[in-house]
Amino acid sequence: MTATILDGKATAADIRADLKVRVARLAEARVTPGLGTVLVGDDPGSAAYVAGKHRDCAEVGIASIEVALPADATQADVEAAVDDLNADPACQGYIVQLPLPRGLDEQAVLGRMDPAKDADGLHPVNLGRLVLDQPAPLPCTPRGCLELLRRYDVPLAGAEVVVIGRGVTAGRPMGLLFTRRTENATVTTCHTGTRDLAAHVRRADVVVAAAGVPGLVTADMVKPGAALLDVGITRVVGADGKGRYTGDVDPAAAEVAGWLAPMPGGIGPMTRAMLLSNVVEAAERGLAAR
Ligand SMILES: Nc1nc2c(c(=O)[nH]1)N[C@@H](CN(C=O)c1ccc(C(=O)N[C@@H](CCC(=O)O)C(=O)O)cc1)CN2
Image (cartoon, rainbow, N blue to C red; front, side, top):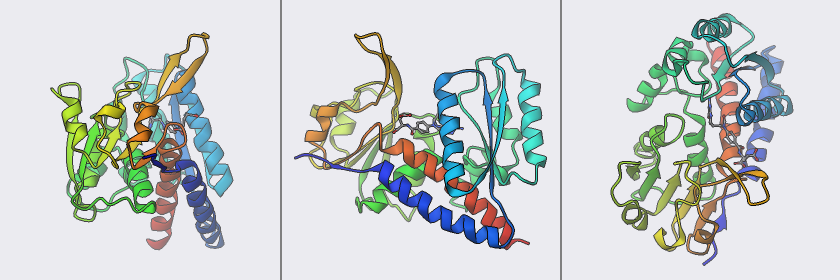
């Protein structure tokens, strides 16, 4: 068996095309959605992700508000940037790029955001709403995983889902999403304390690998026909001395799986598309509330 590729790149392009139409409709009502980003420090990966988010904004007609702070920014500097975006009427939604440099209190920064402008769904109020199954902006990576599975008709109701990783941007909220009544999957969250990862993965119909451990999920661990979503992204240096990004799923696993969202080209582009969706939805809610 060779897995059907869950093409996040093409799907994200379709989503951006739809969003462009909705942004044009908002423009008729004199509303321009605006996405703010707060980037702290000089991590090249984070800078590249933020640049990508603004490229996407330009493509669909969302205005960009870019805030860049130096690596030695203090907690007060970052919180002041958050306060400014909370108060900025041109900004319907914003994100603080994670991880923040060591020494900064990430949770204090996220908690200071206006939950109504939280385009990442990572504010404690919005994560709480997710727990309570109340409407809220959803974290972009888990939402991207669900959306991709939905568009490829991968069955979820009653499925055994194994999520590997318990990080706040991906693994932890993923379990909450997949167990909603609308998805109705049974979720096991595995992590560094899991005794026998292979045993869990072997019985999974859907595996979401978000551990950040290159090649963690190997072909022998995969149930034939399962859906594999590679969310891991780790920078490694090859024998040639060149840096490259690699995922959590060993490429040979594609021979056993039924579906594969690869890295690159799977969940990463979907994460970016879901961010745009969250911003457009916030602008639409703002217009409806007028
Ligand atoms: N505030 C947030 N911080 C972080 C998030 C997040 O959702 N919100 N997620 C990740 C980083 N991230 C978005 O911010 C992200 C990572 C990777 C990709 C992506 O498109 N990757 C490509 C591969 C890399 C490339 O070729 O450039 C892919 O998978 O095809 C998008 C977004 C941590 N921080």
